[in-house]
Length: 237
Ligand code: ATP
Image (cartoon, rainbow, N blue to C red):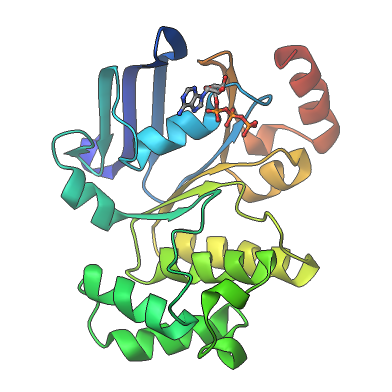
């Protein structure tokens, strides 16, 4: 397998908080253009794994590479490769939506940042609120803006931790489209969801995380929703 086509590569990843082991030897591979859904119970370690992939937490042991870059040593390069939608929106409350996106566009060295910000605000349904401060936004509007921020620099890899939190039905449809567009241009995605039906519909590959270990991997196309529900009950206790 050509390593250039591997977007996310994790080998023997361990991570503890204090004396408590959280990730206990994770191995993972996501190819360019592939979508991986991470499934698991509350507290299994999914967000911790996502934070390590996003260079927000350091690995305790093991290797994490994104598009060939080492997440620990080349964190600057890795941050430019990834778009993150996480529990925190990573937005400035006292800036307007437009100002936030222009700020991040400068940070990511996106050319014509103002125009790109306007396009994305339109795309996520926030054009009318472009000039309002983020502190006045609802939960779902914040999530939409977080999506716009994550997509600004056309990242190679999307890291999505429960990306539909707070979104209405139209919002769900919107992120399905955004994820499909990202895949269509060859981007890879790792996402966390507790909604099995959506996990199946939006992924190529599923990984079950139990107590800090990936205990099962499978191809999404091999499973029906019922089979996935059954498998989840068996694997995630
Ligand atoms: P959920 O489905 O509830 O979001 P998760 O699988 O994403 O759960 P994590 O958030 O990765 O789980 O948490 C895994 C474990 O790590 C939990 O026991 C949690 O208490 C612990 N943990 C997470 N962050 C910290 C931290 N900063 N300090 C100490 N312990 C932490």
